[in-house]
Amino acid sequence: MGSIGLRHVEVLGELDGAVRLVAVSGGTAAELVESGQSDVRHGAPEEVISHPDVDLVVVCTPSGLHGHNVLRALHAGKDVVVEKPLSVDVESAEEIVRVADDLGRFVSVISQRRLEPQNQHLKRLLAEGRLGRPVLGETFCHWYRDDDYYSQAGWRTQQDQGGGSLMNQGLHSVDLLAWLMGPVTHVTAECATLGRDMNAEDTTVATLRFASGALGLVATSTATPPGLPATMSVFTSKGTAELNNGTVVRWEFAGQPAPAPASEGSGPTGSGAADPLAIGQAGHLAQWRDIVEAYRTGRAPAVTARDGLATVKLLCGMYEAARTGRQVRLGDGS
Image (tube, rainbow, N blue to C red; front, top):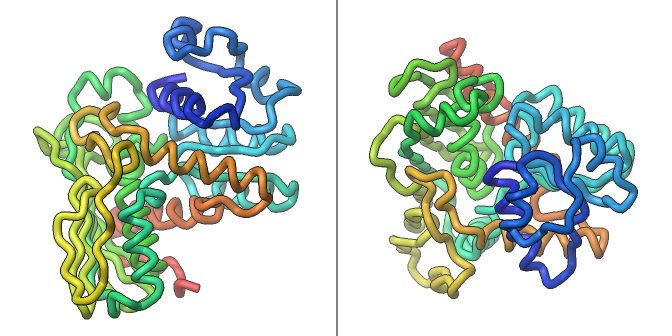
């Protein structure tokens, strides 16, 4: 089941009985006992997916297996929640969107930072035009992962399995920047492996052009000890917002209210800068509450399969730009 799977088990237990955990695959029975779910069935993936009492499959496998497992669940007639990324390649991500549409299935991708209150506030004001015209967006994820982290799971060393610092650690920052600033039309990038001998990149820098004409900067790394909290800055024609680990540290927009301070348990906690488990669960809980409401009412979730596809296209565009040394056009932003 893994650490992120256990995080989902914990969050499901805080939904006031709205979701019942029926079965899990992976991990150990001891982990289920520790998480207070000793009565949950533990079996092979195909048993979980085909279980008649399972309506919704939550995919928390290594990133390179996401696409395969989401498609297996959809073809088995199940709805799906999948940890980021939707898939590690554009082709399978597009297939997921097609199959979900054809079968009328529900798919949501975990992108919990979009649900954090301060990001919702910033997004709303930007969309309403109250903060002026976007000029520049920046996100920096200067994290660190030690040798033990990579030795625990071989896929983390492989770029084609989603193990690189861009697809694995940097995805949330890149996804949030693109969600705030609007669709990306062009990217350039450089990737390098500087901290250890492995196939996956551990450092990436990229430039973005948004459909609005605004520009963007991205830097992600797991080779920058001791590891610093991720930062996000949005500069517009009317002012500046800066966030450090999701906390607003600068808000300079005349006449526009800053986000309210996060109430206890609702804001970001932990940065994950050096410890992948130190991320808190407020964001996951907020997204799961949205998923439950969307599932019950029949509306689309806050983060859909198409949203996940857009992020996969953006990240894969960065990899292509780094590989070719050329600017990559992603589309016109429509």
